[in-house]
Length: 177
Image (cartoon, rainbow, N blue to C red; front, side, top):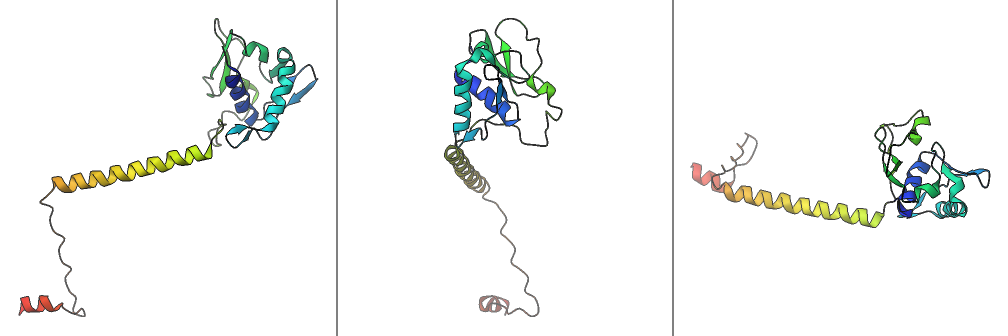
């Protein structure tokens, strides 16, 4: 069974590509923008979802044959499309005969543009990046310490050869003379 969250995520991905939900009971379509507000679904999305839930049996994503009431039943799940990897309703039993909603998008899939995404919590993402960078810096430092400890015979760096214009340090002059 596709959960409410899975169906909402399915719609959010397709909304980002401009696919609306057809609301037959209102004789209109719904395409919320923006889809996300921070890490949450936007108020526009929530308003669209409320319209869908008035009559989910008469609401479906443009380009699909399944209404949203069916998707919320035990008979359907949401999987990735083999062609474009976008979320696609799939029957739990049997074979899906209708094409992916991407079939009528002439410019999709398009690897030249960022693909649609799920909602992102910026604080969580930034914390993850910070932790990875800190972990990588620690790993690099530990690896350098280990390499240095295992290589006691590292050659010393040669001293630079003084040029004719350069002054010779006093201790070097004493050694030379």
